Length: 150
Image (cartoon, rainbow, N blue to C red; front, side, top):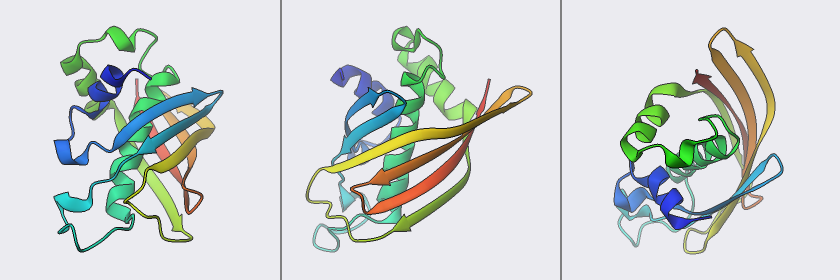
């Protein structure tokens, strides 16, 4: 994927939390890599494992880019001005429920691979609800329910 597109998604985040490195859509599944920097809240010597804090940041970045590629923000989202796009992202999407299970430690000194996929969708009035499953490094698994106001 074009690095400029990734940078557009990451622009709302502080530089030290711009973890998303790559993204590709394979059918209905989003595949990504992340490089996590724990230094924004830990000293460099404190931790080298993936925690719920990094997971949430990575998951947010993954959800936004995944939904854009799935057409949630319209087919012409690549041509939307950056400020307008950030406004769409921050006003229209809400995490309603999330379940996460860590089965083993994930080392943050290496690239982290993740996948996400919509499993169920439901529309009620002007809101679309999407239940997604995700996994990071086959070590962290979960589901997330997201609402998107249209």
